[in-house]
Picture: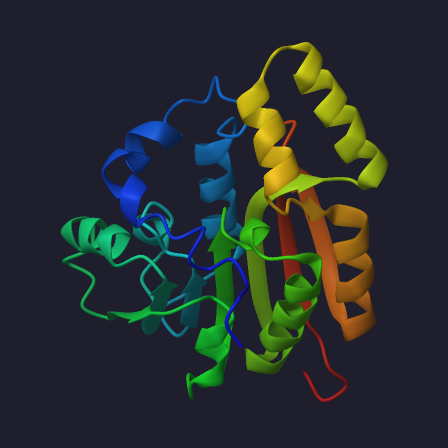
Length: 223
């Protein structure tokens, strides 16, 4: 299954300016960006035995923070972003890349992983698509496996409305458009869905719009 808006959110046209753009932490969309990526890479507790999947690897800003592991599989729909990433990541001989949508890649035989990571990507999926992704992640994680996300989120629909009103009053039409046109996680809804699947969950807020979420897959057969 390919996500509905994969082509719209393909960053090929923005690839050359992307890394400069994310440095602008005065932008509420970018505030906390580096802290989120640092936290995701540490929270995943990756070691040399881990098989790792990164969804939405982009220009490699998270990838270059990931500790050495047995195998790292990166997925992104943007070929131009990957071209830039390859310049940063040439030394990572254990890394492979799949050019695909972050939902459609699960239709391939990619096998199980010890860790699944994603930063600033899943907010491109609708709520229904997020629900599908969460089930894919459960299926593709080994027992006791970890998934860590850093992304744009709001607490719930009331929080979304409050932020739209506040940024409208501050004349930040760029932020308002992002809040209205993209699919920021509703943290309450996502946590409810993830708990029903069976994940253990913790989360942390980094800025007005950025959060981190850590999941652990615990099954009755896991030791």
